[in-house]
Length: 240
Image 1 (cartoon, rainbow, N blue to C red):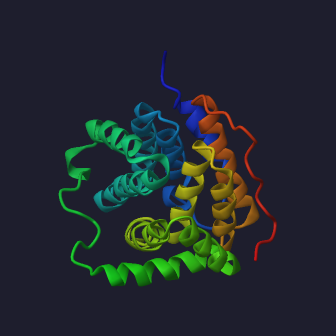
Image 2 (tube, rainbow, N blue to C red):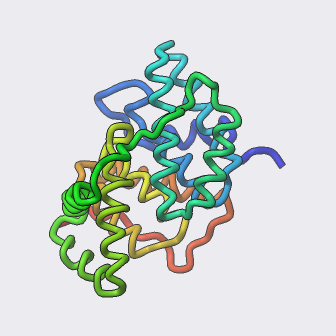
């Protein structure tokens, strides 16, 4: 059986995201959403095809090594961020598959995140990001996490949103939201899907853009064999 991530399928996914005033590869996050959806659907072998397709598009625009390295880092960091939802075994397998085809000049040998930052600073970063994503629902969601297990509330705020999602030097805050949506759709987590569809709207994405992220994620998950017990939440036109 051949790859699921064929050229035709990837071009189709790329066409779903609305055109913006900007041009070029980095104006369309289809490759981030697609790589994460394959990873979270337990199809790590498809991730290299996504990266190679995006790299080919980028090379057609520019021969900039810095832009090619940024592309590689965006895909790696999206897979890393998806691990908290998809499970790190799936992230590791996807990163291994990606690394096998990654040009040596586009690999990293040092950590991207600051490893000397004190944990209290990550807690502050996490709280700020959490509130920007959850808006007026932030207190109720944090209270839920704290109530079901205080360690879950602490971990979500400090390690999840502070250390993991709060690093935005590679993926923008909005790209990070898209990563979360894609991972959650592929893992059939409707409560959290709704949270992060709403969160992407709060971060400035249009209704059409979030709808495109939902569609791309679902199409990748479907071809990967994922089914949803109760369907996938819809994008809201307005969120608080």
